[in-house]
Length: 251
Image (cartoon, rainbow, N blue to C red; front, side, top):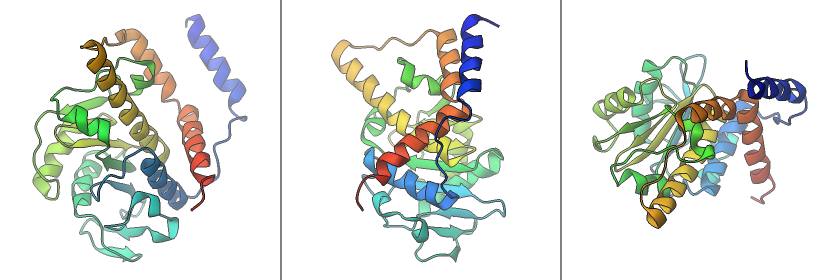
């Protein structure tokens, strides 16, 4: 084990009980995630969705036509895979159907976010994948798939099958002419990656517009940074920071 790894391990041991992770319920985390997404520019249209799989095989999501910044815990709906509303008022976004394909293929996934934020959408129009060319983008190193062809409006089983296959075992996928999807084992990590991918796409586009092709980070260094920035304590502390920032804003 090298010195950097030893220092990293020592840091996490020292800080284990000192970081503020917050104390939100699952419903509160979902609602906060929606408001964070809105603040980061992910709420352009009705197209975005968040779903969370419950232990009983049902799912929490938001009602169609509810803006992300309007979402509160009491406004969530609980649905089954037939898109039937079991709790709450409203109807689910029809595109939630393609989430179920990911959940079936990936038992490890508990939360999915899919949106069309401006910079990710712009990058998706170029036909190019996300390039890990900055430290803050390293959580996507070998962990962001690229679906190079748009399969059409994702409201039927065919699109769900294509998108879930493209995602494979990775945490996220850039969808050509469309947007992105993040799928992980927690609300916190899925939200964290959703924030980071839009910022990474923005930086890539800005760098490319100024100087042409961007230069990828060294593979070994990117892998090291990927693992560090996806440590559970880093993810949870980042989510808590985003959430506190939102909670300070007046409704």
